[in-house]
Picture: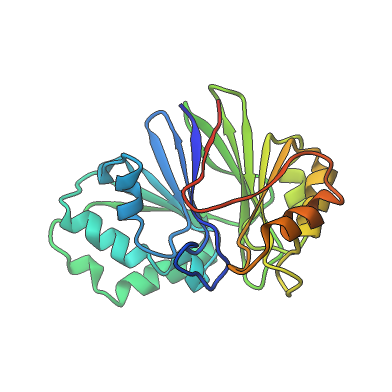
Length: 251
């Protein structure tokens, strides 16, 4: 059963009810973590996943509120006895920095450490990030302060499509990724360089012809009615505010 779990929904400043934005994508034998601003092992256990179930990590860009939890996650997987390999996907710029960060911890000296594979994307639009019996995942660069990708996940069994914009200003690549998607999860941090307002997220959703819009990466003091209302002025289909621990079925 394919599903998306919102592990965190806040912008760069979390609070007691909103972790920084990160997601879990699950289908068949795959459990994919999208960004890792904190150690997610407690939340994964709460939704019934063993640590060995995590197969992949996608890092959309190298900002602390998206990657700072990776070293602790990898260390805890190792200390918990993991032996299965894991693959980390992302832009070359992102993964080069990720490796440099791990080297500060001398991770190559951790005895019996499991294999970590790095899948580097070069930054072309509609690059294949992952393809197997469960998914086709494609990535395109978006318009943020540093190299960043948004992703499109095609669930093969159900035929449903989810798109995650990551941090971005409105841009054509997100519109293209989200073309006729069932769900668009679009950032809504506000009128800031490299980010989008709820209304701009609604405009992208309307242009792409998506069925449902979820706003994410918002300030923790955002008023849900205001955020949803601003997007709904432009987007004619349902709009929701993504909240921590929300599960979205993709069947």
